[in-house]
Structures are given as structure tokens and as C-alpha cells.
Image 1 (cartoon, rainbow, N blue to C red):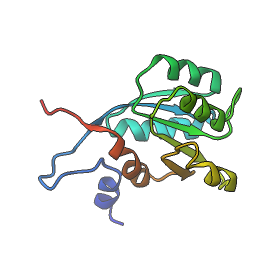
Image 2 (cartoon, rainbow, N blue to C red):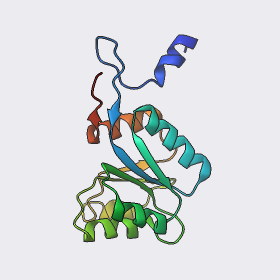
Image 3 (cartoon, rainbow, N blue to C red):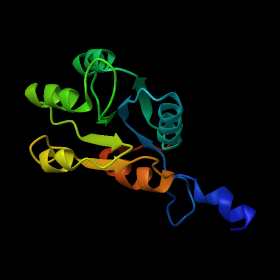
Length: 146
């Protein structure tokens, strides 16, 4: 890959007229792994998203109960509460917020419960920017042009 190709490979999605399209939306990112969390947060911000990042279930519930969210992205294994428990809390409140689960391992039980829990996506870490963008963008709104 040439240096120019590497430079453009990680840019946000572009339209045919070469204008960079950015998106708006508020995403709750729940991940207790410092490096993974920071990396995902940075990737989401390149799309133009407002990202609220927390590292445990207690903080996640506070944000869920007090914020209008366009998307929730949660790891399965986090302190104080599992990702599954967070999803159950969201669904018990009758919130239709799309939820992505990120995990470092494939869990058969999760795949079996994904319909019941209304999980929008299950993504295996590490998540390439292109894959994350393709999955997240449909849940966001294009930013208004000035």
C-alpha cells in the first residue's frame, strides 16, 4: 500500500464529489479496557459523533437513565455489571436504542440471545475502522452543512 493509500484508507466515508461526510449522534461507549476504549472513542469521533465513554455498569446506567442516546456500544465483561445486564436494563425500560456488543471472544450464548435482547450488532475485537464505520453510520444522522 502506498503512503497516499494508507493516508486515505482511514478517512470517514466520502461522497462522489469528494466532500467528507460527517455524522452526528450521541454514542455511549462502555469498555473498561483503557486502550480499547480510547481507540474506539477516537474512531467514533472521526465520524463526528459525540461519545460518552464509561468503564463500568454503574456509570453506564447513570448515562442511560439521563441521556438521549442514538447508540450504545458495550463490552460484555465490565466491572459492577455485565454487558448483558446493561442490555436487559435498557430493554426493561422499553428503550429501543440500538445496541452493539463488542467482545474479544465469540460467545455462543450471546448469539443465541441476540434476538431476545434486540442486539443490533456483535463485533469481535479488534474492530477495524472501516467495519466500525459501516456498522455505526446507519444509526447516525448526516451533519448539517454550513
